Image 1 (cartoon, helix red, strand yellow):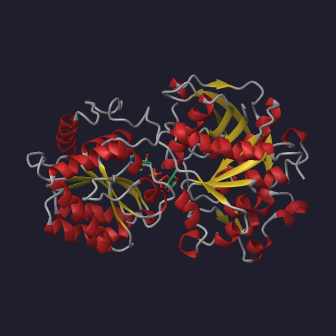
Image 2 (tube, rainbow, N blue to C red; image 1 turned 90 degrees about the vertical axis):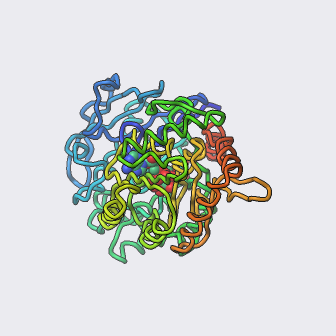
Image 3 (tube, helix red, strand yellow; image 1 turned 180 degrees about the vertical axis):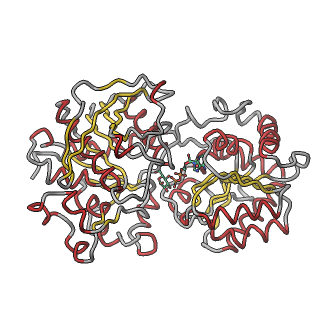
Length: 491
Ligand code: ADP
Ligand code: GLC
């Protein structure tokens, strides 16, 4: 059955991307449209988006629409744009005072208002377009006011009588916690009883928690993470809120193989598949040259790649001990593309200074270089402290780049440790979050690399895996359908 879906997100690849949320929004949009659903995706028209090649068209009914947020009048307009490299279109919410800023996210005092405006814009646009969504699909704290407002602010409107909300947790570590003074920005005073009273007493408003309390269905991006976030170790204080809900559905992210496949990757100068691994070796040389590392010893010396936000979540702390020790003992190269917290940036910069011929840290963000690293590396390191899903290990598998991961979240659900005896498995998986775990994993990977037949098997096992969205989108459809089937008029 074709469904009407209103999808609200802070990121959409390739228009605005800070991490995996963008990739997932883009791929889910395309996949749901391909299944015949009517999907209206709303995201901010960030100032960084170049509108010139997007066939941007103002939506007639959605110009200069007023919203009042906490007594302040704001107005927005909506542009319909072509999502590059696809036939999909998306709605960009244009409000320069909020969205023409340096980055996607910021620290200004009105940060919450930017995303409240986005979420309002989705509701108000549906009203003006007479679009009665079956599903309102919100993502992370930025749009978590959606489920709350469906039950409060916009409940009066019969248009949303049958609408059911889904909130997807891409990362429970970011919750949108603000001072209680933002209460009026969220709801008028007579509706404040709908806010989370314990949080208010504790002197805060937690937008993610409100979404989790009010959503008709909560999903997250892998089955293991769905279980992990019920525990104090991984729940970031949300575990009791989550346990009071019936369940959290874990749906592993997929890969958009139109974007991430070495057989036709638009960023690569050469292409390869499982039976053309010589070309991958050539790409390794080109990558080493490009980043200024000596390609002469390339064949013998494994190249480890990393592409990551440099945040605590990603397990960089473990590398403070593990990498210098392993670099001193073993012969390998390391290429890291990543930006973020300065302590991590300094660490990689220093490592590069210490080993200029073997280590390269490219600080910053580069879509192109990220594809080159996926293709040119032999191994890809993700020692995450926690990882809701993780996409780079999935990309790595397709690129024949052996993932070295910690057994957590989506990494545990997508990478199987290689078994020498049976020849099964797709990567190197370590359990404990400690430096010895990483050192063991790096050493195991490098030992295997020297055993060419094992290595070839491991690489090919990974390349044969299929994590396409065609499978995963069916799981979202099941969730949606379950909600629609149970949707009488809202209580
Ligand atoms: P997260 O969303 O937690 O950052 P994911 O593994 O889900 O982790 O997704 C990260 C996405 O962001 C991947 O597509 C990865 O290639 C990309 N990425 C991360 N850092 C950079 C960077 N510095 N330059 C280019 N792409 C990056
Ligand atoms: C988050 C998570 C990452 C996940 C991505 C997309 O940013 O950190 O693990 O893959 O969202 O769901």
